[in-house]
Length: 226
Ligand code: ADP
Ligand code: MG
Image (tube, rainbow, N blue to C red; front, top):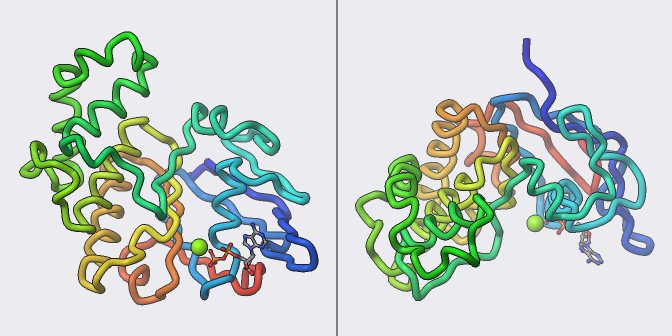
C-alpha cells in the first residue's frame, strides 16, 4: 500500500487574465519519482512555487501528509520536510564542494551562527556520505567556482538532501545541461529515490529525459493536466 505524501486539490494560480495553473489535482506517493512535463509556459514553475509556498495560490490547496499547508510560510513548509533544488544555481562559489554540504548540514541542525567558525570541521563524514550518494566524493575539496555545470547541479542535490526532506521538488534541474548529462541526472535521482525513500517531483520540458527513469509522468499544458 502506497501512501500520499503530497497532494494538491484544484490548485490554481491566475496572473491577471492568465490562468498559469488551472485546477491542478494530483498526489505524490511515498518513494515515488513523479515527472511533471510540459512546454515552456505550461505552468510547471508556478506549480512548484505554490508547493514550496513561494507563491500564494489564487485558490485550491496543498496537503502534506494529510495536513493542509496552504498559506504557510516558505520556511515553515521547508521545516516540514519539503525541500527543493533551484533552477538558478545558488551556492557559495568561494567554498569547496564539501564545505557547501557541511554548511547545509549545520544549518539543518540549527547551529549555523554558533558554529560558523568551526564549520570546516563539522559534519565532514556526513557531508562526504551525501557527496558519495551523488557521485561527487572525488571532487569534495575542489572549489565550486571551477566545477562543470552538471557537477554543480549534483552538489546542489547533495545540499538539498542535507535537510533530509520527505519531498524534494526539482524544477527543471537539467536546464542548461547536455542531453547525456540530463539523462544521467535523472538516473541518479531515481537511484536516490530508491535508496532514501524520498518522494521527488521533477519538472522537465523534454519527454525523452524523464521517460526511462520516472515512475509516473504528468503532462501540463496551458495550466491544465492532460
Ligand atoms: P513553465 O515553468 O512551465 O515554463 P511558468 O509557470 O513559468 O511555466 O509560467 C506559466 C505562465 O504564467 C506563463 O504564461 C507565464 O508567462 C506566466 N507567469 C509566470 N509567472 C508570472 C508572474 N510572476 N507574473 C505574470 N505572469 C507570470
Ligand atoms: Mg519553469
